[in-house]
Image 1 (cartoon, rainbow, N blue to C red):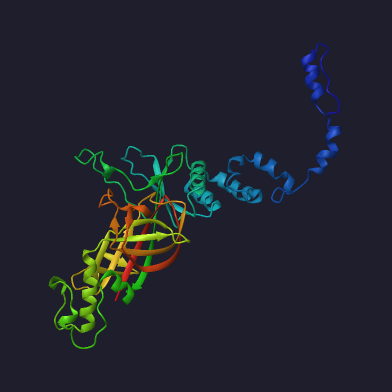
Image 2: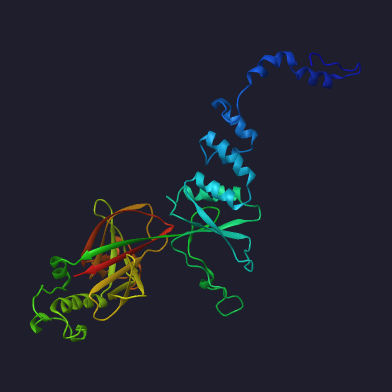
Length: 370
């Protein structure tokens, strides 16, 4: 339109608006230069295309605008479906399956994400997961929880005496402003053969012997610990005595920094002489073990709690035997600060590289042999 004709009674408002228009003649050359394939636009056009397609909310999570345009458009078409959640999580290099809440629960429109692998960090990744998930699901759906490996569900006890108790709670910790529960865990296994120096230090050692059975002079242990057949070989008898000694001990897992400073101590929840058994109570490296008097190996396990220690890197781990609690520390305390315990002897030193996080319960399993 080269010229806009107005009626004779046009007032200043109409005249002003008309004056703002630029004629097509002036725009003609500029319009001809806008000629590109939208599947491969110039970089300078990317922010405008992101705005045009309504993908601006995703820019904090997909910094590559080319990827955002190619993946974001498909994401928009499936938005509100599990496929949209899967696509959004892939931008954060993670994946998870959706588990809907039971329809009979009060929070029936909630769901949890079960991650295939442990998310790399707590901050800022967890908030990013919340954000992209919220953008991907239907408006009615709400992310309640994220889990990996450690998942203790709530007990349905409605209309019973146990209703509204701790059994109604799910495992996890709230770390983000949105209040999502995060319940992660991972397992670390360590194999160790007790050395003579360690055994002498803790007062549990018998020299290697040859022959059919141990001599009475070698058996400086309480009679009740002789839980082995008399026809057993000297090697079996020795192992059974050394392993049985640990049944009455309180052990602590010791976590240390690179410079040797202690991060903290976690009380072991299992310390038993065990034997390999099908369907046993404990699993170690794919094999089942059962606590048993006369067992020839020792199974030790500790499990940290959420937020026991965070933002620390542990580079060594060991078992503390014979530690003495500081006065005023409760005997049943599970997590101890470095100043809460003294003395004792460390055994089973292992080198590790472990970033301790508030959202992760670390399970440490030791198999001590003799």
